[in-house]
Image (cartoon, rainbow, N blue to C red; front, top):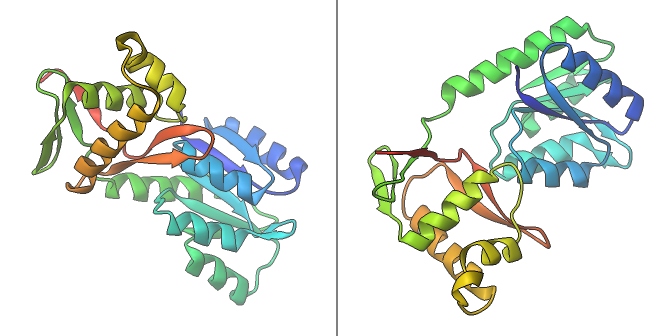
Length: 227
């Protein structure tokens, strides 16, 4: 099975056709027609790549790519466009796209280009951090920090939902409600503790806050070990 892709184009017929074609090559392809919603999805879920059309209605695919890269995302991005002049290709690549495919295109070539970029990113991706179940030590190379029992429980709960946000209420109900410990503000306190430990070490993930949705792990989530 290949990776999970997000196809971003304001034409539903195009996104549908691309999704069907990519599914035949083993991809779990999802679609989005709006730039703002696409950005939210890319920031809150783990995609292996994105295919972005240059023209997104009133929005610019090039601006979207630039914003995605500014957020720190390293996933492969292919741009699609009927505009083949050097100026537009250059603008797309300078914004952060890894490749620029001109319509109409051969579908096999599109898949080949996508797989080249996926391979490039996978070979550059560092080994994930590891979280010990026994010692509660979070380690990434030479960097390590020891979590408290509650910090460990909070992080592992987020790890179980790595591709989607977990609400403040769910975190509180799962970890604190049975103790009668304060209120939901205690979640923010412990999220703050975890963020401080992550920021002081070279870990390849962070905890993001999604407004009205909760918290989500962003980046390369750690691996839980029994060591």
